[in-house]
Image (cartoon, rainbow, N blue to C red; front, side):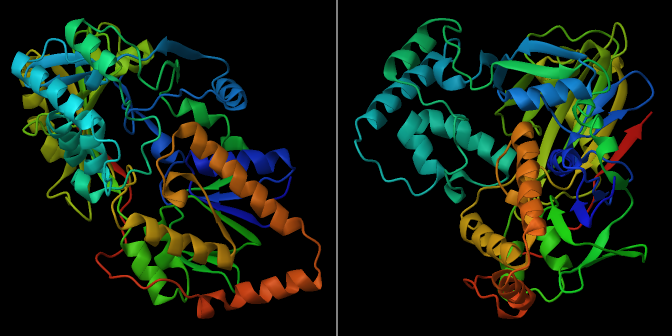
Length: 480
């Protein structure tokens, strides 16, 4: 099976979604990644002491039968299933998620203020919505918005809700009616309205096992960091000095990293790419000498003096993630180049995280801790700030002009989940295959000429340059 000139940049879910489709068409593409191992954000790490940690919390809750079948086959049908339950921590109180319909147990004055403001907000028939903050106040009322989701936006997205759009929301924030708010204030956990229900997770090997079954479907080249993409000569140049040619290029690597690699990119496209914002995160991994007996798979934390935004419980995803008789958790601390750069080293966040976990009652004391490590990811979640829409339009238009098929969270620059990332890769591969298989007609030749000249002639909306491209790669560290 030959590669037929197909090259894929990035070895996460989207990259292997593309590779899997092409393999089904008799093509084994070449896949390049700057890391020393494939997997991208899907990667899992076995530290050799019985603890297995993912690069952040991951589960599969796809409703797509085809994706479910593929992922199951990747694990040889060895996966766990369960119903999602997650909760929230606020100033010593634990309440079910989502908080807007689970106010029961919070201080009475806070509950009264939340309900009063919710009723007042509901009276406004056509509220003006210019940003995420406006939407939150219109949907939930001022008190709830300022106490919970606006604080979480600062912790998770690293910027203010007023600096964010609303086109990423989808089903992620449930908008209740008054009866649901009242019932959730008067009763303990009366409703199940979270958008995630049943989930799957591999029994062994961490979340990466859902993608390992696809590794054989591509000719994988790790430790291949691209430093130049030449679309005229159809060549890739790598940091170690080697180069290779291609006929069709599919990319899942982050747009702010991809654009500076392309030869002769117009200044307005470079500037647009530099305005795209993405969170970064330190995942603090903690293993302890006893099981963690809690119901949720993960918890959200709203207190601003607690460094992490979310904690996931490894044994509640699969018991094989922890040694017998032990427990483990991951705490996520978020940063961004644009709004909150990381200062110091990822390991600097281990002790503050342990302090906060003890404060919350998740850990009893430091003597329980038998594993502590960190995973640093320079690309986490897309930040839907007010710069994003026009900047993405400019960058995507340019990539289409020169014939690069982009895919995945960081290629589409969108808020997409695992199954959507895989399907995004499939779609990019389909588009690339169609372009490759077209007969050479005069129309195609003309289109080819346009693409050859796109680097010189591309024009788009000018925008103000704020930040340079992000170029770091993920690393992991461990402390004894």
